[in-house]
Image (tube, rainbow, N blue to C red):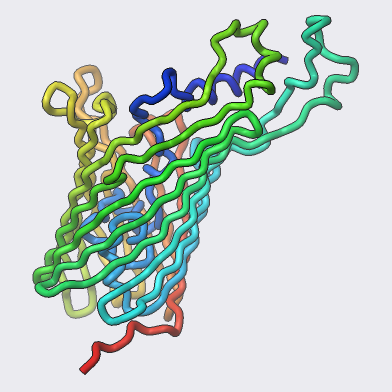
Length: 362
């Protein structure tokens, strides 16, 4: 009877601030998995490379690489199917030098059993016919992105993304968060260089808790129940470079990225300055033939630990383009080749629409 209740409390304890305001190490981690099976098959190395509709996530400046309007959708099952992830996005050019885009994300655990009403705190026992009092709820995180990109002289593109995050744990707790991402991309010959400051303004997540719904648990957990408050999600600096080697019938693309985080998560990354900065390196490779079939591979996670030595999380993927329609697939895991968290299959599809980028004015 108490197991689902304990699960609710673990969820709340994981996201609720212990004080009125604190820095959250994983406050928007549901977005960290990335989007687009092409990008994920390349180890998520996309900061300098992204130039399609998925740039709304990776680097808004890359939206200027779109030749025509495009829409995309992706679904993934994470952690052996426990967590479902959905993403949809659309982008279109509004002028020769400007592009707008919007995206929606949802990551959630559905059909969690709620047994609070099935327990009689007065009797200290389940109510008669307890199953009739059991309901279900979802613990879900959602995000809404709106992006604008513009080109400047000399191969420089710039972009900005406004982000709204909505997080909820059934009717027990919910939060709103707001921030901006800023991005730059520079193209010179076959090279592309990218820079993104994620959550540049620092994301504020304000939590509220329905203490009345949880008061029945006071006799089990004491008075130390979660309370509302504000979390701060600190900025992350993302650097990336990509190189395209164009042949007569094929294109081979290389990409290397590195994220610099300052929130104390160095236990899961390469760290410098005594853990003050965590570095997350990534690398990817794609070989496309006649813009029809593509094969991909990458490394989305690279660690060197004292106990296990070198620890890698490889990814692989493939893509097929037929006319304006493209479908991509990627396969990876969450914690190395021996992961116990399960493997993940990601499938995304995108369609180029009739609307072309306007020609420059004479």
